[in-house]
Length: 205
Image: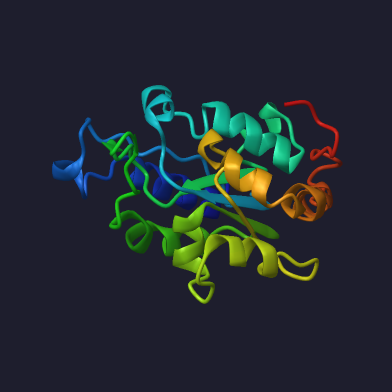
């Protein structure tokens, strides 16, 4: 392991030991992320759900299955941090609010994101959900506006709605997402060839 890899590994461990907002959490802090300085693809999501919290595995639920389908990569590649970094806006499960997962804690991204992302030489960053979009692309008034207008072939940042089943209505109301956005996303992901063609457009989910 090179010095830079060891340094980044230590940083990830530092994040996993974070207790910054412990008093506000309904469960014992368990920061959930998977990241490597070598990753070509960075996915910035919302916050771990209860299944991710209990398993310490990001996107370990039906939303993760749908996200992998959107990306066109298989589970093994998705969870290989040498290729894909999974970094949420909030690192710990925030609990529930009005029958849904609560918003990610606001302390996490300002504290850790710059340090993590500055060490990752990613070729593509995918912002998943309105919290990531609002933080990194606040010039768009709505998530729909960002998804529809920011995702172009020449940009290395793409925006997606959250793949939760709660967004099925949005998907039905915006058929252009599956017709235009997802083929572009899969094309960009497929172009990320690391140690050969590790990303497959037709990978199973």
